[in-house]
Every structure is written in structure tokens, then in C-alpha cells.
Image (cartoon, rainbow, N blue to C red; front, side):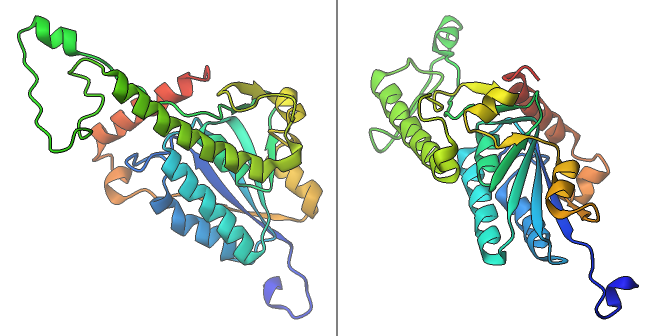
Amino acid sequence: MKRWIPFVKSPPVISVVRLSGVIAASNRAGLNDETLAPVLERAFTKGKPVAVALALNSPGGSPVQSSLIGARIQRLSKEKNVPVFAFVEDVAASGGYWLAASADEIWIDPCSVVGSIGVISSSFGANTFIERHGIERRVYTAGTSKSMLDPFKPERDEDVARLKTLLDQIHGTFISHVTERRGARLDANTDLFTGDIWTGDRAVALGLADGIGHLVPKMRERFGDKVKFRPYGMRRGLLQRFGMNIMAQAMDGIEERALFARYGL
């Protein structure tokens, strides 16, 4: 009832948004802009929070979804005049670090993995296999560049060159985002954009994080011991709650495990 008593000041509120999992438009259990939009909107507006804290644990994924989510966080922060603090748990790598860099400050655990500021594209080649088994691949296109990097046809140098151009363009956008957000905090004497990863104090020394710190004690240190934490997260659909989407969830889980495994997790 105290909140309704005139002249009695309510304790400050921190909205805590959990961003955990692979970043992908099609991943039902992961992170994407469509499902996070209402979560972030509530986190920045409900109860007039003094700050938004991101509990972040992601090995990355889609650069487009990373960019959309990051842009939404920055836009809401500016519109509502609410600062954002990212707290990295196991990993904030690749697209996960894109999200972390969207915050005003990044705090990590001594064992957190951060970085991987690069872009990757992976596939397979099965043209020799199908030839051995007497299978003929037939592809017809209108447009000389319509079929690119077909895994069932021999790799072409021009396709690889075109792909590398696209990857370089996305990498450049990633670099621009990090340099804009981290600015002079970044170590100018170290190439931080090779796709390498760092942990703990080394990541702090390079300017990829602002310090070692955990969410609750750091927010209490910043906003007082009486601060209240209000958690926000994505809501699962009815089918997911009752386990009726088992196959899709299993495939999503395999993809997520593979991405986390890149960082020894």
C-alpha cells in the first residue's frame, strides 16, 4: 500500500531482461526481434524503471536479428531516457556481443567469454558423393547469379568471392557498431575484430567490458540497497508449454548446443 501513500518515495526499480540462447528468426526458443519487442517495451516503460539490466548469455546467430534487437534496445533507451547495463554470464560472443555492445555498460564474470567480432558462413559439399552414387543434380535458373554455392554442385571461385564480399560488408557493420558504442574504451593497439575471444580481466583491459561485476550487487552499488528487481522474459506459446512441438525444439536445441560448443561451453 505504501506506493499509494502521498509523499512516500518508492524504491527504485530495475527491469531485468533475460537474453539467453541462439539469435535466429526461426528459433522458437531463442532470441529474435519479433518475440523480444513486447518484452523490451514493457521492460522500459512499466513501473518507470531507473535502469534496464540485460542478463546476457548468447553465442550469437543471425546478424540481422542481432542488429534489429540491438537497435530496439538503443532506441527505447534513448526515448525513455533509461540507461542499459549488460551483465554477461557464460558467453556474449558474435551476435551475443552485438547485443552487449548495445548497452551503455558491459559487466562480466571473470570466466565470461566475450568477443568473436566476426562473421561466419558454413555449409557442406556433397557433389562427389552424389556422383559416386549415380545421382545427377539438375538446376535451372533465370539469372547467372541465382544459384550460388549449391552444396550438390562443384564449388565455383566466383561464388566464394561473392560470399566473402557479403561477409566483409556485414563484418564492417559489426565493427562500426562496436566502435560507435565502445568508443575510446577500446584498446587502439590491439586488433579486436579478428573473431578472437577473451575472458575476464583481459576483456576489461581491452575495453570490451567495463569491469568484473554481477547484476544484483552492481545494481545495488549503483542505485542503492533498496532497489527492486522486476524480471521480464519471453513467453512460451501454448504448444511449447505442453511439449507438443518436440521435434522443432529438439532441432533448435542441437543448433544451440553447436553454437555454444564453439566457445568450449
